[in-house]
Image (cartoon, rainbow, N blue to C red; front, top):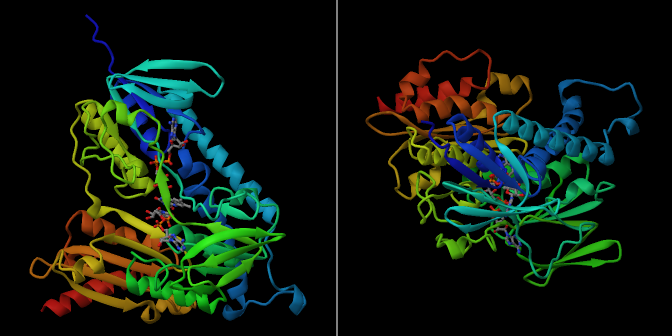
Length: 467
Ligand SMILES: Cc1cc2nc3c(=O)[nH]c(=O)nc-3n(C[C@H](O)[C@H](O)[C@H](O)COP(=O)(O)OP(=O)(O)OC[C@H]3O[C@@H](n4cnc5c(N)ncnc54)[C@H](O)[C@@H]3O)c2cc1C
Ligand SMILES: NC(=O)c1ccc[n+]([C@@H]2O[C@H](COP(=O)([O-])OP(=O)(O)OC[C@H]3O[C@@H](n4cnc5c(N)ncnc54)[C@H](O)[C@@H]3O)[C@@H](O)[C@H]2O)c1
């Protein structure tokens, strides 16, 4: 007797959806992904991948500007020494790269046996999903398990409606035919800070409108201060405590109005004021799936919603909007739904990175958690200016912070502010995930000279503090 394969329908093909689909197929389920834009989702097509590719060009250009400080001369006249951004070429490369990655993911899914349906999905009830095909052909899919992984879309202000030409969301910048002369970035969260940094590096005049008293609210305060100082030193106009109330086109300019009546005029405005979940009109309410006032889907640590058989993963759950977390939530959902062994989602080990220059990477408990008494920890901060490799590379901004529990000495978190902090955070991530002690970290060899030397040195300092 043959047993019927369990059927899984995934709505949304971003990291939350496609990683789940791969696990589902591996566990022997019949999996369909319904995706309306392209596999890989916003992460690959418009958000994470394109922004990091843009930053790669921007950072490369900044290195030219810094070359003189390391004794590099150019065989050109003084006037010719500045690199300039070939925007159309940059954008074409980014769009090509994103599309290719999307196609790779589709091919990977299909070769694993996942069926990809191009269209818009909607839950009919807990066992059925209706899909309106982009080719006009609609279908209904039966499902033992439904996974909703529909992501988010840029939040818009009614008084600053994007026109795709001069008032832009972060998803529209890759169509720009030329570099903005003066870009006003509204919102200094991670998206705003990263893109303000990118365009500054490409040679734009940049004004960053930040509603709070510093950029990157919600991040380690010392790290955010380093970034804000670097932004200002490189010529960015950072307007703190400045909430934008509107943006309007005036001829070839954009005028952004602030809540105290001031105005800022630029050639373009980029709105980075957060994102809203794409959970409207997809049948959640009719199916009885609980959502929050903001429209996020309520899930537990194994990605279950309030309705048995319906799971949710990724940004639409509002748990922690990162590609890595979305993917983990999706995989956990499949392990749970298909009866495999599963460990509930644990956010303590999540490594996150802000791709400014220097980068900010974090893992585990934060300084704010310690200050608020959520966890007891001893802390140490080592400025990079004392690191020999940093000196050789002329790196002056940044630090390593390490947090350890008193008594047990286990590492519970850390912050790295440095070029390529995204790579340097990994050893601290391993320590946090595996509950290593500062002594274990301190006694691990690091290369001399190396940036990771500051991590082992910070661990040694914590050991000394204890004894
Ligand atoms: C500018 C920017 C940069 C970022 N950079 C990083 C980074 O460097 N690292 C990182 O970890 N995270 C980054 N993020 C966050 C990351 O992009 C998200 O956490 C990630 O995309 C979440 O994945 P997801 O699967 O939940 O959603 P998404 O990637 O948004 O995918 C959801 C998919 O669902 C589809 N969909 C929606 N509704 C339907 C429907 N009804 N039917 C069919 N399909 C539907 C959408 O078309 C989309 O393709 C960044 C975000 C932004 C905005
Ligand atoms: N490198 C990465 O991993 C990366 C990059 C980008 C985004 N993300 C993820 O996406 C999440 C969301 O980040 P985000 O920056 O898109 O959104 P966000 O909600 O974190 O930040 C939006 C910012 O805009 C400000 N704001 C809102 N209205 C404003 C107004 N009218 N005028 C001025 N400022 C205004 C808010 O105070 C807030 O600081 C992040 O928490 C992160 O998890 C990750």
